[in-house]
Length: 518
Image (cartoon, rainbow, N blue to C red; front, top):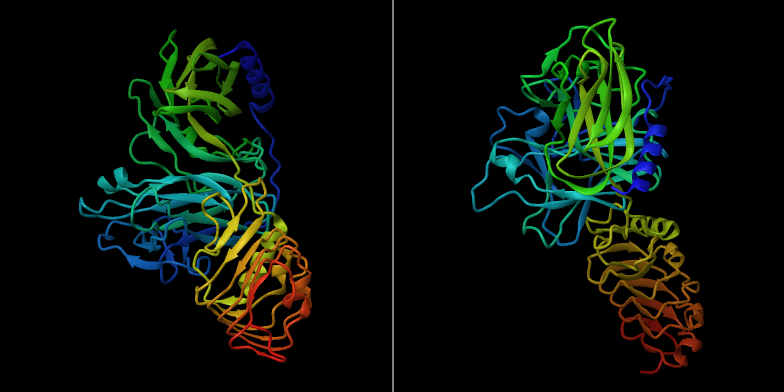
């Protein structure tokens, strides 16, 4: 690692790490959701947590009850299955508090399956950001559920969580069993700039513990802590740590076990136990002396680079963290003795950081939402961000590739749509093509004069009524205009009939007087 980079990381860590943070608890309106995906009625899991059916938050997919559900929590005994529609995304949408952070934890359990039909692989998307691919095959082979966890900032009044059908993966549709959306306290993971980045969990570990992953009733964020057993160094403690003043609010129970170095020897851990891509990571480590009224001082290294020097740990506990620590390959955490008893560690978390993918140009997104409300029989994937991530635009919507994409084409022909043409279509000022051909739309054609880039307008084979406005003739870029087989009346504007370079079709079906030529 270059010396300059090490210096920058050290400065970043010094600013981000603190032994204790006196967090003043602030009340907040907690938008949190425990969704039983595919469930028909409210259920309660083995820990007493209430789960509700997901149908109020998603408009697509079908419920499927698992056959081998005897050992499952009720929330995993059903799943919602979505169709295999390549490049479509199917979204949950829920109200949130703008500018707050949310922990999202989707859970997937496919159940038993024949070797010829492994579970599908698909993408996860939050708002306009690609999160990660979901592959549950290995867990399914052992009869285990797969869960993923990420932390995202809310940029508006609603957040969308979507499953995307990537045509490069498998040939069956995505599924989901449960979805937790939990609003976080302001102090939790707050050193990350969530206007630019999101966090995906790599590992959350309770050192010195054995058995299954643990959750704690006192943890309002319902986090899993995975075991990390090392019988040679594991110890337990019965004293209570008050962790309400810690950054990230770890549950007190994670301090009940620890790994302790041998006398006059460093404690060396390979953690997290997977290869990591060369990238920036959020690393948080938690310490509390297992002996009351005692302290010990040691240094903390990660991959031979000093992470924290002269860390003094007491039974009151402390946490240290870095927001952008470079990791690559297998990682080693090394604790070396300075004074007092040998070093120890109780728990740790590692998150990967990834950039947000961006959002559709705000005015275009609002216009499409209003157009959506004016129509019936809309496609199932008209949810989430209309353009992002790239490759997952709404069916029939084409966008440019800008950082805030603009909508440049609407091709909704032969979709079985009914309803009317919203005047908000005129707010999509980057449009070059519009086609609602061969649907069942009624009502008038809105004023489209503001669409100065419009080249093609295809509204034929509907039930549109009213007159044709001469404002269409004022669109200098217009090259094709097809309105036949509607219920339009009146006279065709002269500026359309004699517009140079315009290919048009007004008849049959309409009732113009006098009849236009052709």
